[in-house]
Image (cartoon, rainbow, N blue to C red):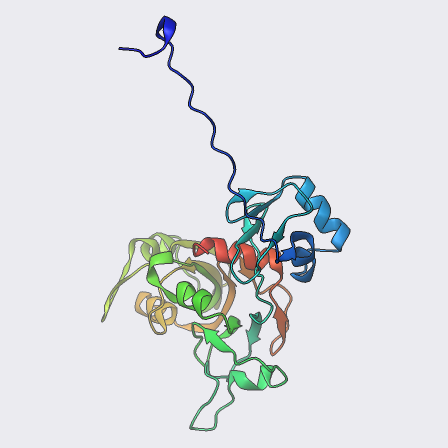
Length: 263
């Protein structure tokens, strides 16, 4: 039985938007500018355009103050890292370098590439000494934990050079799965880039993290790997970063990466 005349349902009153203003906090536009989103004026425009949320609440007023240590800010749906003590770097790891910050055997390590950084950085994931390409270094423990957790299935992309001309059905074989001594291994995507009778260059994408998984898969299929380069981790690309060089991951890239792991 309806409790309104004419059988129409009574509209529920709209809830008032939650107040995220912190009286003794920092002005939102200043927080955004400090985080690298542009000049103070540019950040004011972001707010008035409705592109900024604080704790999932849209903010349009310029007078809003927040607590950068407690509030979560998104711009265009991407999380903004407000803790300026946290840093994430991209490194192009050269051949012959082991994926550790210290090696008791005295081999070249990742530490040499960030020796001038005051932060205590640790690497996310590994590349064996015979492989090269993209590694992430960070002091953000939560981000690192999520990037390495199997739950989030962060994909990694590699270019792989192998001996001989690969057959047309190798991609389907790798996607279906290769039986290894520690279980079946699969790739998510496979693409042939180039092939000659002597060698083939392919691109593979996968989210598995078992030791030397790509090398073992191709060797099991009969095509030993001669060069392996990681070109992408999630949305972060190696690009034209030269071997041994590092770069700071920008806010847009970092926000996309954080979104992939639910931050």
